[in-house]
Length: 196
Image 1 (tube, rainbow, N blue to C red):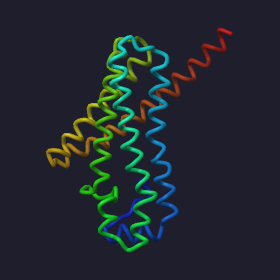
Image 2 (cartoon, rainbow, N blue to C red):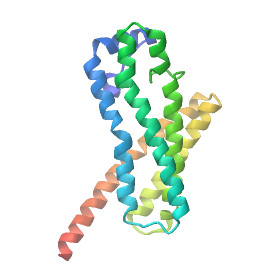
Image 3 (cartoon, rainbow, N blue to C red):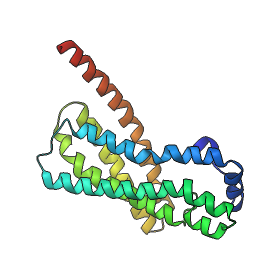
Image 4 (cartoon, helix red, strand yellow):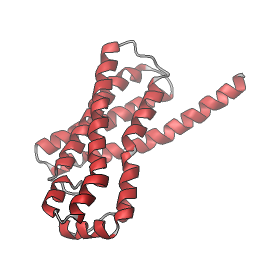
């Protein structure tokens, strides 16, 4: 998305969206897959370590479900609602739902969703910091990312743009998680082949 983001003021960004609607929709279609992908990744990792603490597992699960719903509303509205409002000439209404505006409803919902993700992640992965191997390091990175997401939401409440921008760093922390998970999966497959 960073390669082809609308530039300029809100009016210019809306013109860009209408002129590049296919690209805009493709981008947000892939962004819409972030929520299900990260949740699938997390539960694939958690499956290897059954939860002894059923209450924390349920609380974490509840927060992740909240994240999934809020995340889906944010990104689906960009594909469905914003283009319809813009093509109908309802720019004021589109501005309320446009993710590129830090004063929009969906910006708030997105930040709240990632706060829920952060809280759910803390409940699910905090216990795994005591494990050995790759899951310990993944858990540490998850917790750093989670704390940054919660802090970013607090920044939004305090109207502090610098603190709110921690969402970006929380997302960037997912890159090493993805790389480490691939390495972990390759090692597991290699060990399974050697043992069979």
